Image 1 (cartoon, rainbow, N blue to C red):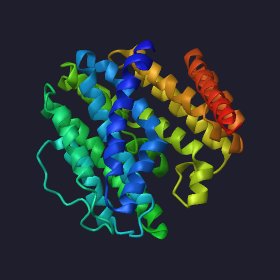
Image 2: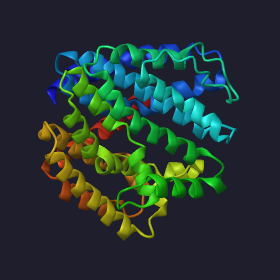
Image 3: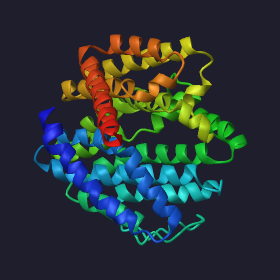
Image 4: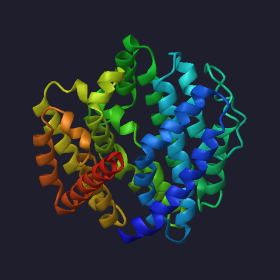
Length: 348
């Protein structure tokens, strides 16, 4: 943990300071607003993803640079799609093609804003893509990385297209997509959640940066993370955002469980499956730490206070996850407590 707090998080902060400066230079007001908002409100996504840079060994700084740029693309595009006046699926697909190009390293000339109502970002999105390309250029076995990472990225892109179209089309599109792509005992909303995580991509990249990516290892990493670890990750993210998503009329997968008990049982099932999968991965203690960190950090979020049944959910998952999750949970609660104290003292 010392490495995370003393090396990785400061490096993440440095990268985000740069991207925040670039976002502030965007001429178009709407694009600038969403770019700045995505960085200020979702920086913890970059911090969480950057933990994987530990696996990159001596190339951890390149890994941080890639992860921060890629996650910034993801969060920025999610904001754009959530607040877009256009519900055109081709608009969403073209925007999210940036996430494919960021992994492809093919110097794409794609006009990502072709169907979007705002266009002038002063090269912001293309610079993010280019930064990912430059970082990945040093990967050993980049073709192997791309073979597996692009499959995950394409699932992510499909999800973002289907979940942002007009309200009446979202569920039919997502259920049909799940019927065609889902080979697991998951509901359409659980499969969608699994597709919405970028953790598997970061994991593959960091093994690549360390020169430790083989065909067998890449396959094991993908099957280890998809679907269960990624599914749990995104369901926890959606779980704490239920009140906010209801206010904004955004789709939230937790709303589709028939009742609280079923949802709690499924979350616990995913946690146990994710734990089993993590024990079979190379560097198993690291992946188990990530899993326990996810549970502890999300369940320590202050937004849980607003959610009915959250006390029971928190109790069950922390008990099933183990002692380390309770440490992360306590750490997160302490952070929010100290943040309140600082805010209060400033107001006084």
